[in-house]
Image (cartoon, rainbow, N blue to C red; front, side):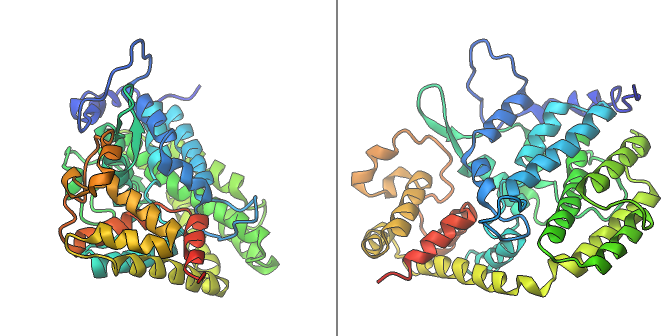
Length: 407
């Protein structure tokens, strides 16, 4: 059996009590045999945001093709890659799995292009850009809710280490060695993607696993959907194997995982060898040139833009100082599904004293953070719309858009 290189040092960061901290005291369950990180894992598993990932685009929008990778399959790949590395290196497997399972909760519908469209709208109307890593933290801290032992709806309240791994996971790794940062910072202070390294070795492993997983799986889908002809496949083989073996998800993932486990150590960090770093960078460049910027995405991008912009701007036009709920009630008579769904969303996250009197009793069991407060300005309202649309699946966004076409 291979030496578990990090076993002796893994207790270092893990001995810091801050990584186990939650925003508030999590309720206790008698006889619970799970660790704090295992509880985080199951809370993510049971969250609404996780369930919706199965109907969100990863790269290729093709809702009728059961074999195209969706966001939830990508998450499973990342968990598999990260878990294998963590076991081999002697890291905390439960923490690794929890971070991997939660890392993409903040993704918008329609993949990274949907994120780009929503970010532009959020910047214009709410005064802040949208990026899925920060949105993932926002979801687990403020938006997704679970019912507690007493039937009260509360926030997920995850440990610091898992929350940190979610916001710090950006898979665009452009260096071949990762090390955790030394400070336990306030995660709300992170202002842009990649500003800080993760706080734990497990977070570093997930960050690298994210890149390994998506590059390999995207190649497989591109082949099956006819994005790559024989000439391009031969080019990819030369880049990764020298022209010999097949290049598919298994080959790319396996070879890089073995390479990382062989070369990583507490002294050197989570490391890809120069040889495989060069190969991984070549596959990434190949994917961008031949897949992600392919002209075949043009119609999809226009479609995604139209849907997200129509929904956002339609809801944004309804803000009235102190009268927004009344305006939404009138809107729901014309567009019942969109109007009712967004109203219900707002009710859960606004202070009780600004809710319609007739709906306050319904919200009594919601003891969660109220990020929209009194809904006192258009910027806060725009942020509520951003959160609402970001949580949608592709299919749900399309359905609500279709409602706009009916007269």
